[in-house]
Image (cartoon, rainbow, N blue to C red; front, side, top):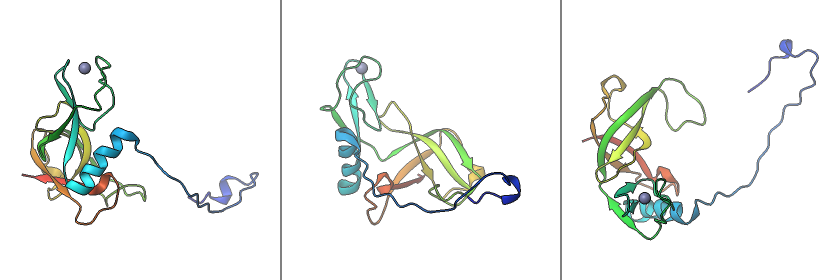
Length: 154
Ligand SMILES: [Zn+2]
């Protein structure tokens, strides 16, 4: 964003651009989750047998009892319910969609934790808590979490 010169008359400002090569490692558990989305179009979680809770996205340890969970994978339904939502009303180059769009917390059938994702094919004024939605996978991989492209009403 350009700074307006009249607001900073005593400041020296040099405009520029930087390109930084980088890598992001999702971790062992996160990698398995994303690879299952990408290659099998499946949503995986992990289950804590002690607490009888299924976590999605998966995590290495149970947040309640600290049991290790990374060997106890479960496959989840592609359908779930909206447990909360917001409608994004502004545009920004970092955002995944043009406004307005629905960003919802979705609890998949069989999961105990909701996770955030985009809901499409629905008027933002018509979204409700408890609405049943299903996953729509990307037609071509992006090799990111966005291989699960969005959710839409069932
Ligand atoms: Zn536990």
